[in-house]
Image (tube, rainbow, N blue to C red):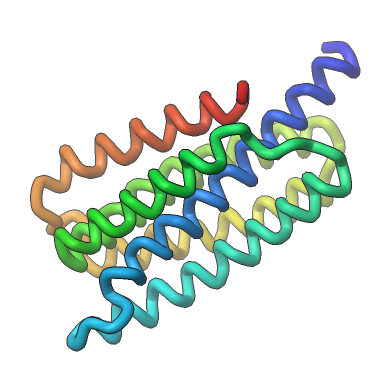
Length: 179
């Protein structure tokens, strides 16, 4: 593999990571827009705010990396913001279980994605970035596990809902690598 190919692959990987965290923040914004002031949803509201805060920290870290390394974000950012907010709001409107199903589906894809990246960065000797992403991955796993514990799989039409969300995430990854 040439240095140019390695550099291009690294830029694509970091662009995708940034896009994913951007999308995650948008999903939680959509869910909080629905649950934000509704009585009886204090528990999920607290959970969503905590997870959103962690995603915002991840996004800030990738913002800093992209700026430092002069990597442009995906051209799809405005679409991912709208899509993420819509996905978050829609699943929240379907209820708490559906909101958790959304988190569980998204985080399962991101956890796998980050695992591949950690391995790739370690293989190239970039252990600092691998460790940073590993810490983010731990947060994503915790989000996924919380959502599962809160009944994600009890959501209406869970198999279909989760499959559609996972497919959308995988498609967004592929698109963001290129654009």
